Structures are given as structure tokens and as C-alpha cells.
Length: 234
Image (cartoon, rainbow, N blue to C red; front, side):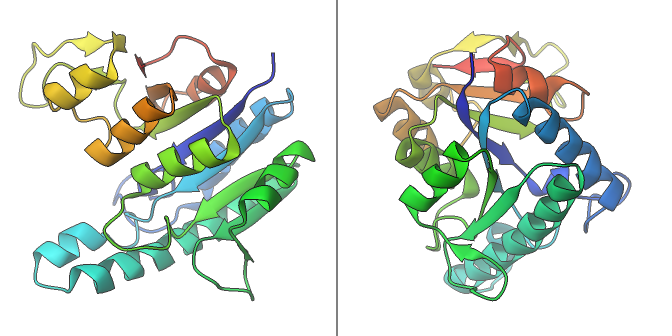
């Protein structure tokens, strides 16, 4: 059964695996091939990209930069990643469009909800960049917002860990991987899934969140299909 999903890719999905910085073409190609493979099964996929591999707005603001200015710089970083992903997706054989929440007409379409839906219905992968177009909002919140707007069946958060843990698995080796957790538990126990705004938006719109490890081959495919991989927040 085909699904419409929003896949949230952090900047780590684009970065060099050694330096964790910049754009590594082979890494992007690997992610793109898996997206294209499952897209060919008939699923409608919108991708929200982060930009932390190029510029982290929040950490820069913490070092004294104006927060709004830092967030706008971060938005521009996501546009660079979006263009890289589109190139890889199209070379892998699927049509792709980039839409941005800030106007950059020379390189991408502006985000228009009905146009994004139309692209999906026509069998195109849609890459959404520049967050919500507003500072102080994360790309997690963007993924939740766009999923609600386009009527997605789920939000898929691709990370570098296997899912949601009861505690930080790095500092606590006894931390337990949670396969099924509620929105309220995530908020009450401050589990590191998404920011509270994104979680609340998904809860209000009854959007399940699947958190999984994108570094394991086949996990993106499984998550898009709706298979039990990683952690389900619902």
C-alpha cells in the first residue's frame, strides 16, 4: 500500500563520514539511491533537509551571533544540501523538485503547498529547504508542519542512532532502546526525539513519527514502507 511521507534528513546525511562536515557526493548518492528505490514502489516522498553539515545556526547564536541572523544563514545551508540531493536523485533516475521557504527563484521554486502536493501526485520527489522561512524554528518543526500541510501519513526522522533511548546511550550503557513510545512520554521524560514544538504539532495532527538509523542500508526503505524499524512515536 503506497504512502505519502515526509522524510527528515539532518545535515549528517550529506557530510563526509570522517570529518562530519561539508558535502560528500558518495554519501549523498547512497541516500538518494535508497530514496529513489522505494519511491519507485509508488510511495510519495517529500524530504525536509537540515544544514548542520555546513552551518549550525543555534550553536553559532550561542557563541554571540544574533540568533535570527544565524538561523537565516542556516536556512541558506539547507538550500545547498537540497540542490545536492536533487542532483543525486535525478541522476539515480527519479524526477525531483526543490522548493524553498525563502525566495531564491534562480535555483528553486518557492514553497507552495498545493504545488508541492501536485508534484507528489505526479510522481516527483519534493525536497523542501530553508525551514519554515522564519528564524527560531528547527527543521524538525518544519518536517512536522509540512507533513500536516500536505496530508502525509507519517514523519520519518533519519538519524545516526537506532531510535529513541530511555537515556543517552553514550553516557549510559544501560540505556534501553524504546520501540514504541507516546507523544506525552517523549515530552514528559524529555526524550531526545524532536523539539517540543514539533512533537506537539505531530500529536495535534495525529502524525506518527518513526525515528531510525539512516546509516544502516535498507532502513530508509523500511521506514517509508511503514515497517517496524527504530522507534515509533504515536
